[in-house]
Image 1 (cartoon, rainbow over the protein chains, first blue to last red):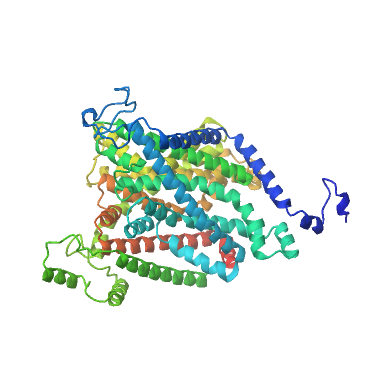
Image 2: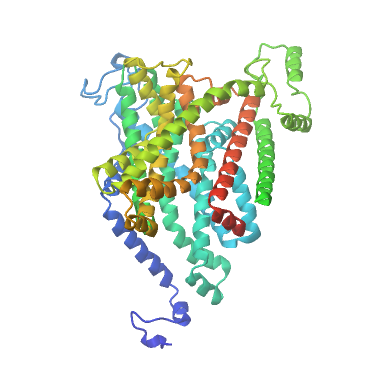
Length: 310
Length: 310
């Protein structure tokens, strides 16, 4: 074997070196991420989606401080204006004379917020659950998997609606209902990924050097599941946006005077025969966001896992 | 195999028991009673109604009698549709739901397989691009919006199909199309990925080397081997169809269980909500179990892997 002092870039290193350079794996995953980013940049659809979504997020943030009109200000004398009919109301007004553009901005922001918070809760529950289940294995894993099986035997939407009946209506309860209904998939993916990494050589090396199981799980396994987590997040967000829209559309989601894309769709559908733009506008925003998130998610999945590339 | 099925059946019964218990106590936790809005009832009338539904007994007695009823297929009485039992209500409503779900499944799977395999065979050409784009749109575009648009443009404007009635095959066409979009996209993506992999495999090369025509290679070798893994999609597809049918039935006023579930949620008809949750749960469990058994028969490797894992 070689002397650690004279280690060259392409030489085998023995365990002492690995031990002395605790930053080794962090470097490894960093370069892995750089590689993934490089791969993603080649994917035009994903990059266009990324730019579009950044734009949507920035616009939503701006709408926190400035909007053309108050989204809830009613002006009945100016109700149901068509788009571009009045310079002050670029996208027209709804049946109560509220500015459609402002309502869209506001609704998109609420929908995005619900989706992002639901995804955060989803990660906070799903990742540790999957990590513990996959890393501990054996009996613990068995029990945790049975629990997941039981939860996933209830269709997601049914579970979410049940939770919504029980919680008091409001934005928080929607966030929790959606994330409690959808964390199972995240946990499953993280578990599968953790089990795969568990058998990797560097984990064996870390164990052989006497690293505590908790430390190995947090330092070696967790960072390496991040690709799966990030990819899954890109599918959870649009799923949450869709669920919110669906629930609000049915009438058990976001309640007036709050607007979300779902409530806008609900309102737009009622007057669709006469004022089609009132439905088409939220439809276009919602669909573009959904398509962009899905394309970006596909791009990320391919970038993180070259094996799935078609 | 026998032992495996027995174990799974036991798990299924346990799952159903836990779900029943949880939903029962969750429904009891909700503040207020279903009679909360009927303030006009006198005290004696209220007591009489409570007695009729067994609400005057202690919770544990209610629980035992509910669970006992479940064993006999008795889900209790509906609050909303007076003097109708939940089982009767579900039985009366399940037909239309199954009809449109199966039609949507067949349509989605057939179109999905065609689109997916065309995409894989003509990889990199405009055919592939078109099929991939359709799949992304199918997954991203919310099915309930598709339902509204179909209802308005094909049903109302062009008058090709009934808009909101339930009368023979023509009235099932639009709900079926709206419901089939997501399965179509899911199947198409799955088949494409599988097919690309299969087409690159050695046995396809061998088949080509034997001088088989492209058609023979595709139909006898590639298609078969790409579709078998798609059996794993059946579980997710069932969830998709259950979710989708709720809203689609709601929009087209299909007298199915999805519409019943949403109506019950909106009107707090707890016995129906609980009954339908159990029904969906049983349905999903059975579908997943059947898929696993069929998959185990088709590909024995899976079964032994599962055995090793647990």
